[in-house]
Image (cartoon, rainbow, N blue to C red; front, side):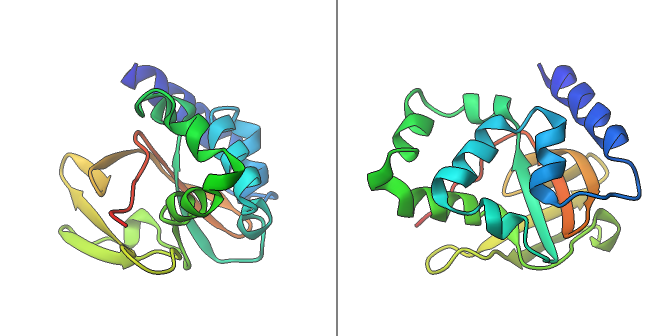
Length: 161
C-alpha cells in the first residue's frame, strides 16, 4: 500500500511540473488522490481559502490516509453540525507561509498552523529516513502550486483540541 501511495504521489508530482499554473485546489484535483480532502475542504468552506493568493503550505493527506481513520470518522466530520470540528482538523494541515523541504534543518522544528485556538503547532522533523509532520510521513514533498506548496502525507493530522 505504501508503494501505491508513493507511486501515485510521484506521478502526481511529475504531472504537476516545476512551473505550475494552478493553485493548491486545482493541483490537488488534477492528482486524483485527494478526493476526500477536497470534499472536506468544500464542506468546511475552506476550498476558496486554499485557492487564495497565499503563500500556503498544505500537508495533504491522500484518500488512503483518510481511509485509515476509524470507521465513520470522515462521515461524522462531514455532517453540517460538525463543521467547526472539520474546519479545525483541516486548518491544522495548513501553514500560512511557504515551507519547502530545503528550508528544514536536520532536526525537529515547530511551525504554526492557521488553526485558531488550541493546538496550533506541528512538529516537523527532517532526518536521514525522511520528513515527518506530527508523526505522519511525507511521501512526496515540494509539489509547487501558484499559491504555495503541497507535501503529500500518509496520515490525517488531528489536533489535540
